[in-house]
Structures are given as structure tokens and as C-alpha cells.
Length: 575
Image (cartoon, rainbow, N blue to C red; front, side, top):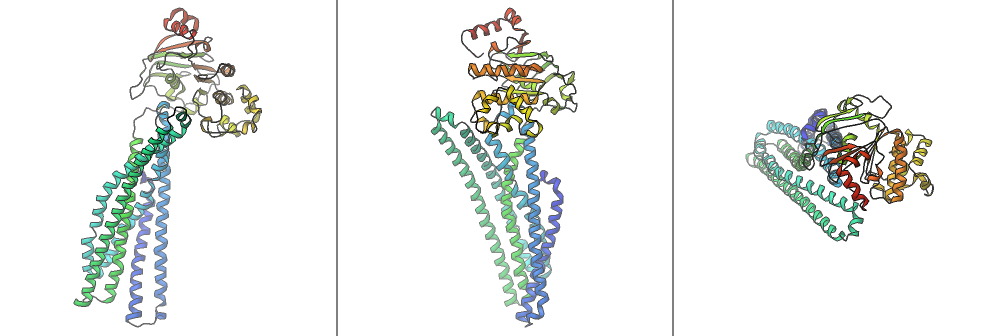
């Protein structure tokens, strides 16, 4: 997968190859110049002023080597940056294209770990391993050709000993990949556990479970530490082995050169010295490749984890390209639709019903009947598996997604508030898109105006993530203000008043009634007294439609609805 992500950036690889060739030639030129200068000054007794041009060339060779090595490094960093951006966009698309309920599942910290730590782990492969691999193929190849031309015996020793380095790298690399994957898995688990604990710290303290959760975090932290130490052990073993092989090889070459210069006397000083300069350069590049290879295998483990996530099967909601042109509330028709979860926890029966413009529709039923899931299907954030979903007579699969979502507002009891000001939360960061008068009117209609006047900073008051600092009713009114500002044609309510006191519920009900005056309203309700005036009540039971009718019709003809009314009159407030 690492190579697949790299395909759009082959031009970087080509440039790295060209720069590596130039750098290799500079290294060889540097070696020749050093040998020439030392041989001329110390053996041929030539004055160094007569060699000034060689010194200038040596400085140029050193600068060329340094500059092109820096160019290669910069290319690697740039390529890594582009690829990490691409992978993060792929992860973002993966999470946003999944259905609503699947996206809500899992730990937020674990998902964040994939975006941050997991993708950052890929950096080493592209910014270090790939540039070094290109250098370690190109430069040693040029060096061995020169050595073979100048002194075949040294070349023979190198060709015998050098293969041990890549062989050892492969052996170590296999282990590194496994350990790195385990490290990333433990990191993601630790991140998820830690963030979940922070988010639920107040609840844990209230129920006396804080110490127990502290122990879980400690265990998760220790597992991550152990996984990290395993990776470091492999890294240290890799470095030691590479140093040992390199030192042994260079020692053999030095011994061979000494024997030929002193005993056999078939090698002159210049050639021998050139070999002793080029051989370490050859093995240095291979050692650098060994270190980069370890980093690259760490990236491989992260890439495999990300790829496994990206290949998870999910059912996307399909959309088309047609704009919704009418300014009236939409007419919605469902014919024999089925929906459910891949895991098999819930599967609906075939459902057929319609929602007319400006109609008030309520969806009721016992827990687990599929009320919220059906509302998500209507909203277009949960896919249908069979049947037909038509909007104004057009198939949902042909409608432009943004055109549909611009028509509706979805208000639920767990709608999200962001860390920021109340104004930013009401306008969703698009303050410039609305006039001050529009914002003020939306706040008033949501019943927030008097409350805002009492705040020291008014609408610029900052709130914490998930609405920290606000009561349940205040959160819901902020969310209602969003809806009033958007002026939707379709409003979906998912038990927005659950858990609120009677007074707050009455205030919200009044705001919801005002919002419903110009829009179609579909409500999932637990409290039956809130939906008696609905034009149509859909009663669900075990994933199927048991009955459809007005309050009076269901009271007269549906025993299950009658029983629900009796239970609530007995004091229970939820179905």
C-alpha cells in the first residue's frame, strides 16, 4: 500500500535518482581529489600552492555533495507531506461516508490516533527510507564500478561481505513490521481509553469508578510502553549488527590493502588510499539504508493498520447530481424499504409510507423498534438496502446531496456543540453568511434572547466542547437557533425534550411549534402527549410498521397504542 500511495509522485523519485547520481559522482571526485592532493604534497613534494585548483575543486565537490544530499532530503519531506495529506483525506472520506450509526461507534481517541499518530508513522518511509534507498542503490553502484576498475581485489571483498547487510535487514525488517503494527494498535487503544475516561470523568467520580478506570489506563499505558520497547530493542539490534558487519568488511579491506602494499608490493599508495576512502563511503550508504529500512518497516506496520481500516465494508448513502428546485417543503415517498446493520443487530421489515408537504408526522414505538434509525433513513444519513426512496417524485440516488441537506434540520438530544462562542455554534462558523438581524431573529425564536442578555459576554460567550457549561435545555435551544437560522423546509426531531424538566420542555415545544409553521415536521417521540396533534402517527414494532393514522384513529383501532397511553397515564414518561 505504501508504494500505491507513492504512484502520483513518481516525479519526486526521478529527481531523487538524478540528484543521487550527481551526489555519487561528487563523492567519487572528492575521493580522487583527496588522494591526488595528499599524494602530490607528501610523496611527490609538490608545493600546495601549485595545487590550489585541486583544493578549489575539492571544495566544490564537498559543496555539491552536501547540497544535493539536502535537495534529496527536501524532496523526501515534500513527498511525505503530500502523501500524508492524501491519506488523511482518504481517512476523512472513509469516516464521513459511513452511515451515521456506524460513524458514532468506536472510540473517538482511537479514530484520532489513526489521523495523527498512524499517518505520522508513514513519514519515515517517504522522507527517510525512500530517499535513502535511492541513494544506497545509486551511490554504492557508482563506487563499486570505480573500485572494480581501480582494484579488483577490494571489489571482490566488498561483493562477498556487502550482501550480508541486506540479508540481515530483511530478517530484522520482518520482526520490525510485526512489532510496529502491535505498537500502533496499543497506541490507538491507549488513546481511546484515555479520551473516553476524560469525557466521562464526572460520571466515573459520581459512581465511584474513577480508581478502577485509572487502573485500566495504567494497564493500557504499560502495554503501549512494552510495545514501544520491543520496537526499540529491534532497532538497537539492527544498528549493532550493521556496525559489526561494516567494521569487519572495512577491516578486511584495510588488511588486504596493507598486505599488497607492504608484502606483495603490487598496489601503489594512491590506489590503496583511494580504496580506503571509497570503501567506507560504500558501507556508510548501506548502513544508512539499514537504519532507514528499520524506520520504513515501522511505517509498513502503520500502513497495514490504516489499510485494514480503509477496507472495512460499509454501506454508503448514494446520491446523484440533481438540484431540488422547488421552494416548498418536499414530498417524500418510501416504497418497500428495508434497512439495518451489517452486524445483524437490527433489520427492518419492508416499510411503505409517505410524508406530504407541511405535514406533521410522529414516529413512535417501543425501544428497539427502529424509530431513530428510520429518522436517519429519512434524513439521508443511513442507507436503505432495498426499496425506493423518492423526493418530489425523484429517486434519492439522483438528488444532489448538498441540495437535500440544505432543505432540512435535524434536532436530536445528542446534537453536538463545539468548543467556541455561542455565535459560532449557532452559525456553525458561517457568521458572514447571515446578517445581524437574521441571527437576532433566530435567537429570539429559539427562546434564547432573554437568557443571552444576562450573560457577561452575550452571544460571544465561550462554551466548552460538547456544550460544557450549558444545561440540557440551553443546549437544545442553541441547536434550535441553528434551525431557525437555516429556515429549513424539513425538520426532524429525535426525542429533543427527553430528560428535560416540564418548564424547559414547554419552552422548547413552543419554539418547535414556531419552527413547524413553514416546514414539514417529523418527530420521534417517547411522550405521547407531545404528538397528539400530529397529522400522521407511524407506530413501529420490531422493525415494521404496525399502524399508521391520527391519534383518534389509533386510539380507536390499535390495542398497542391504547396500552402505551394507559402506561403513560400511570406515571411512566417513556415508552
